[in-house]
Image (cartoon, rainbow, N blue to C red; front, side, top):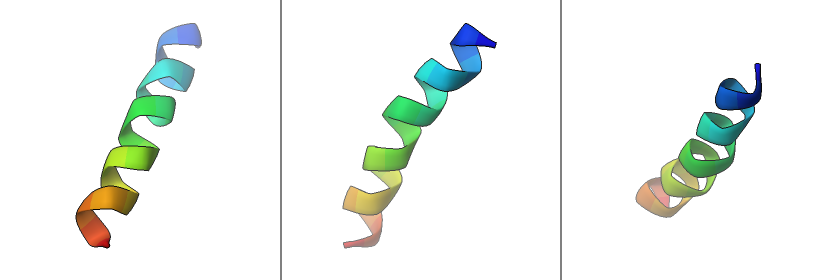
Length: 20
């Protein structure tokens, strides 16, 4: 579960930056 949270933390900002 900890890994999933880490992935979300990294992927969320990346996705937002890519979408911007």
